[in-house]
Amino acid sequence: MTTFAEELKTIEEKVKAHLSDGRFQHCLRVKDYAIKLAKENHLDEEQAALAGLVHDYAKERPAEDFLKVIDQFDLDPDLKNWNRSIWHGVVGAVMIREELGINDPAILDAVVNHTTGDGVAMSPLAKVVFMADYLETGRTFPGVEEARKITDQSLDAGVFYQLKHTLAFLADQGNPIYPKTVASYNEWARHFSSK
Ligand code: GDP
Ligand code: FE
Ligand code: FE
Image (cartoon, rainbow, N blue to C red; front, side):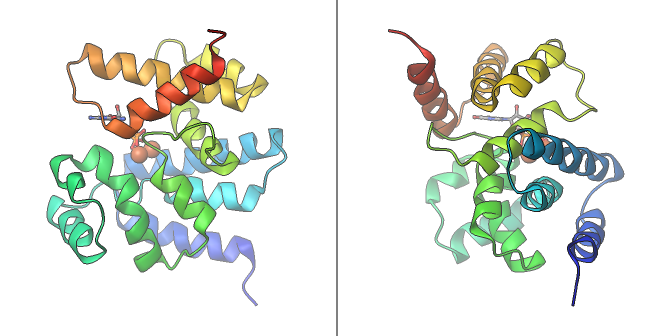
């Protein structure tokens, strides 16, 4: 019988083989932060660890790989108008299923939503991975300590904090914003607004 630790090690080797060292170390830190947030929120730590470890598995793949998977698996053709920033989660989840053999729908859903977030019905595991990606110990952006404190108090408040700041950052840079990121922001803004 394979233990969870052995399974995690096997997956870890495969993730490592597909990523630069810097990105791989980020994945290990996201795994650790996801475990911390899972503990705080009484969620399954093994699911959180695995989802955190694999979340950026596809981040360094050539564009052709993503375009092929979009066709082969009949994903939304509008995806072709975007880029790796968006593809590595939504399309990357298919690669993780096909290439790493991870079939747990909750883990795949957390990977799909890790860049854009999702509305208020977002699963607890997806929230954990979304926040662990933002808050892992290697992140140093201004406000990260505040964001960590807020998230320790409330995972939902953390999700809204991240969406608010990412949207503002993308707009400030003049970047296009993926519609799902805007939709996620709107749902949480309504949820937290008294108006
Ligand atoms: P990373 O993979 O660990 O770097 O983190 P993410 O998966 O959260 O984000 C990947 C990149 O996508 C970052 O540079 C984000 O700023 C960017 N990003 C997040 N949401 C959007 C969006 O809606 N539109 C665009 N164009 N970029 C986004
Ligand atoms: Fe990512
Ligand atoms: Fe990441």
